[in-house]
Image (cartoon, rainbow, N blue to C red; front, side, top):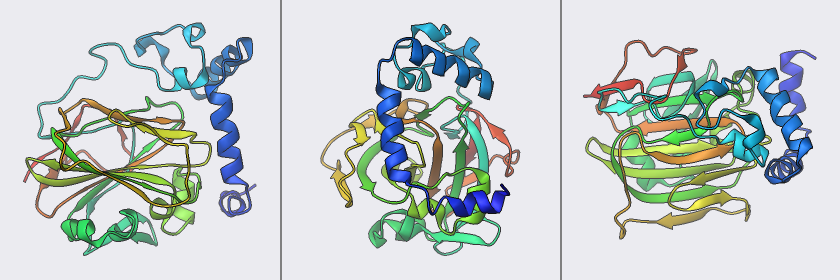
Length: 281
């Protein structure tokens, strides 16, 4: 099957049902079946278990335990930079938001308003701002960390589709990151407002944050907002803020003139959590 046909076929797939099934299997304690699945996954994707806090695949009771594994202390040094990369993965794109248009792939863009669930109050903060899109492949470390020190002010669960978010699909599905299920997190930082958006995908059983726990499931089919402005939830630069239970993408937004991107950051580049993303503008 060609790449184009594989992308088009996703419209017909029962993505919600597949994702629910995958989520149940990944959280189930299935003994030898779980161990077989973990070992096959490691071999197929070339997962480096030497840097895991628990390198023995047999020590994980569920596939989710393995997939969200912690790393050994010091495995990801934190750079001396104002803003660091929050994940291991691939830089899909980064640059300037053109008014409210965020680049997705050649021929495709989506708006910051759509990404942030239609909330113009918040999307206006990012007019002509900056963005970075980071893709996490199955082999990557799937915990998400804070790019900089920040105070949480809002989280929004946004229902949506569950298309794959791999590069081929990003090139073929218009507005992909603003149409998939996602969790929008808004933070106050020393450099202004920051949006950190966890984008779901096919087979992504759930997304979780350290302050809330598992956000989805349940999947209520409507936007659900959580306000934290009257609380003092602060996370340090490099601290864990959440995790994906299978695959996906993180989109970061900043206001205009906030950052100067690391000149080494070009589309397609492999990145690691903790490396310098930028310096303050």
